[in-house]
Image (cartoon, rainbow, N blue to C red; front, top):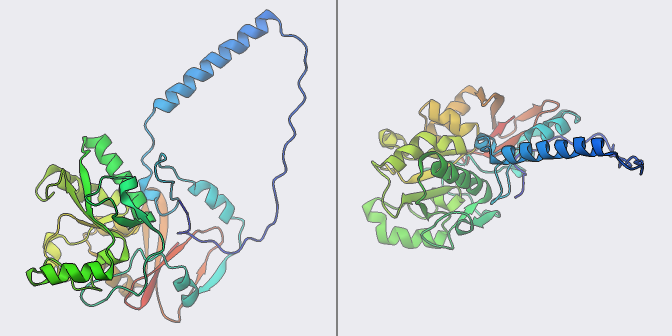
Length: 324
């Protein structure tokens, strides 16, 4: 899976690693005593490696934005190696337009006031290759799918919840139009162009084909989805802000550290963007990593310090959010 969320200023060094020639070993015969020692070391090493392979992987899902693992492989992060590489690079000033060109769109606000931006996401992936779905053709953006797979794996390992099923993912304009024509009057479906599903970052999820409201599985998602970059998009006590009735099945990928910050401060996306617009910049510490989150308006610039990775997301209200 591609890892293009975070960007660095241009490389200033062309230094390349040189291959190291293996040392020539003596062909003199080993005596029996030396052979016994070597066999003992090999046996101990094999035992240690086997023990390590049995250890559970560290939960690093919070770093999904920093390092996107290949789907189907154990989740892992190469944040340290990326930081070491970035530390060799010079700081650089970035303009609003430059950042808009590399926007990952994770923090796009879509509601009745702000319509879905034009175009179809270019990184849609079939969910059914990695998780249970109601429809095998359901799609989701890569970063969101990576977080989803990690979240469902944790639910299975931690609680034995193995029957989560994605019922909805990315929707086309035509699909949303048909859905709205059938259900619009009931208030269940948003008008075409105003559904989060059209940006490819939202999912509807059930458990064993049943609504997860008031269930242990739904409660687990509410308390843990932020660890994987997701937020409960339409909570029951925020309907006056979102304009959408409570949907315990609807989760939206926003990435880290935003999902963590919104969860601990009980914010929906509308409130989070408004906070950033008002304050201009906040600092978030998540999993021992300090993030600088900056809100820029059109015409603003930002200097990315030397050695720092960053990403950017247009918010669909006229600004862009930069995470360093």
